[in-house]
Length: 166
Ligand SMILES: [Cu+2]
Image (cartoon, rainbow, N blue to C red):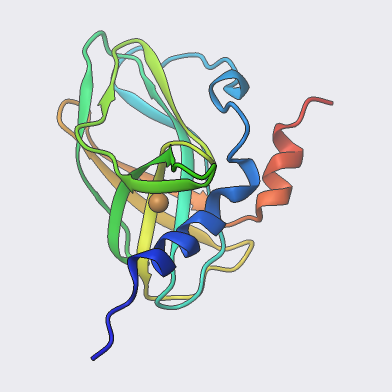
């Protein structure tokens, strides 16, 4: 039985992030008002995806508590496997992605998940994700507890337009 080549998988994942991979996402993060306590999620959105394919969810995680929080688990009813991924540069100017190990969410801080950076990867999709759909995601934080997010499915271009300055 043939194994799926890691290179092919990497290429597929790369295609997901290529469009914004050269932009510095940190500087694009808008200012957010932090919640008085706990964690709130702002501006979540997801990419379209196919059955058995992959998608990614982006958002800003606002930690209003004074304490650094960590993520215990992620789940969604639309995906068999959900992981927090980070994007990194490969030797040849390409971008790869890998599971982010021990990500932290600093107290009184914002962690931005954007194309070309940190993102939540949905794998083994069990339904088609079309533009206009709403999908759910449950983030379980060590301190803030379970937070359920509803993310609209939208295309990359639409989001880019939304984020561009007028
Ligand atoms: Cu990924």
